[in-house]
Length: 314
Image 1 (cartoon, one colour):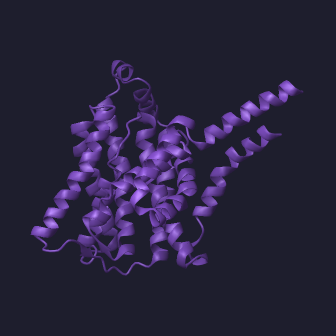
Image 2: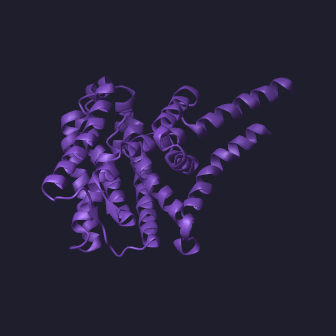
């Protein structure tokens, strides 16, 4: 009976999470809408992160680099160009950065790739800070755009729906198979003729498009942005932990992780702002050592153990 219950949770969790996230914006407002926007933006970034890092097993901390590029694209162009052009420019900027970074670094692996992606985000933050202080003569920028919170939420939902559809198609494509082979054994992938560098760069850029677009969509919500906000390394760590918690091998795994942890992270950031990174580190260690495949596979494993015990007792 317990195993049946766990199986029902595994099959029903994605539908419940999607229904909760995709609440029509006209039905919620105030704090509920703020939480929904937060869940939707992290849902986009965590799913995009898992689309690349899941099959390839490359742990990227460059999420906030692409996100920040999108935020600043909206801050720079939002007041002078149509909103659709701003979003397109943000997507192209993120893709260009990912291609350049990928061509330089995706031949690296393991801790070297992690260090580079972390350094890339910090480098961009320092460059933007220098430009703002020495050229723009201001620490940050005001973003006065007529985009209501309900419209921000609707745009993020549309972006998330598009991302999930493309991720589903990718898993069933030849490129998806190539990515899984690369993640399993890079040497074997090279020997059977897969252009591993090209495949990884393309997917890295593809995931960056959604991260930078999410950054552009969310920019009007803040009104004021500066490099410390747009390029906060905490965002990269939160996205990584949410995706791992839900399970990067599952299509809806990252979304489940976001829905489970978003309020937890918000509470910790408000109540323990100076200790937030320490809490994130503890949660990460818990995931790695207790449930490395994510919460849903962990529940499935527990269900199998309980089923075996029931059979033994019977």
